Image 1 (cartoon, one colour):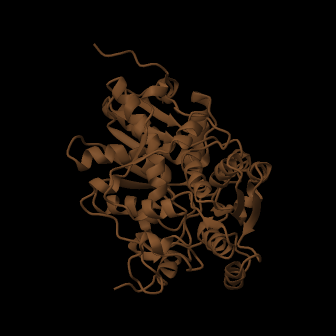
Image 2: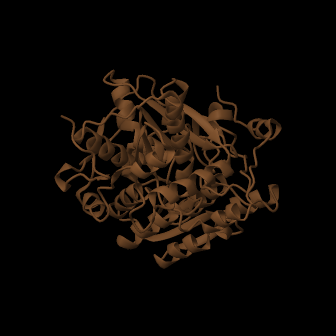
Image 3: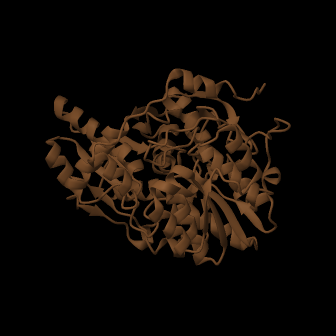
Length: 456
């Protein structure tokens, strides 16, 4: 007899995962290694240690260890806001009139308002253990910067944040939360770094990109003794930390004998999607189960659906290693009209390899349709979703409506990465009818891709 499914499924403290999962260990086709931009040779942990914390550098290059123990202080910190609930969207199902069962993993029940805190506290912990003074980072919509500011304040670390300029201007309250936690916040590109000055000279008046902000943060970190650079998405180490999402989700579903047919997540750099789906992908790789996994990205920054699978610089200033990924070119600048944080020119090497292998599919959606879905969801479920998460909501609703047409009783799972209470400028533009759907032309994308580095 099947158990009655509550609105919210919580794990007991004793059921919380104690290890992060490294999906690379189960991948037959491993993600290609990071390359030294000067020599084009694969980078080792020792090569990465001047930029990253030592332990994070080791995790970045380790594609054989299936699990990493979560340090006890990180587990203690997680208890402040984890377990995160797995929610049955009964109200949304009823409103849609669909036979589908819809679940979402809600990661917004912490002060930073998103899933980013899962990796922020881990990266800050390793920095503290190494005896470092502080960290430098970038942030797009500000969720990562906010989470890292919270983690650094908790551990008494200094933090310098380079925030994509258009988000710095559009999301002043998230900027102020970072400052409240003690971080310094600089709009990027800026005149504070040499690479920032160069980018501004080449792209005068630019509203910035994550690639620009990464370049500035890396330069700042390597220029100051006792500092290291940390990244909130894209890197393999970050996806490892974020598997706490998928591990919790799978444990909660197993507890009630629930098996998802479709798993959906928004995709910018890949941290949320990778964290949610990795344990399920592991089952697929081991031949234990099968799922349909959909990565949802904005049509204004469509790295998977319109990008090229190739080695590219991780940053616009071309000071970082080269990663093999689906990319739009490191010079690609998303439109300032794009309201969400999914602004990175490339995609996680792990997710790029899985996509190239046909393990996951990708879909790009227009911004106005995303906000239509966000408001529909808010009115049904009572949570104002972040614009990023709303990309997944859009496709979850579309899949549920398809079930309504066919009568199929599929189980749909999606990741609700966080709340949208600091994104009210975007909601205001949508409500006032001032939001548009900018989609880059083939010529714009090809112009950016024409600068891809030549890698044998």
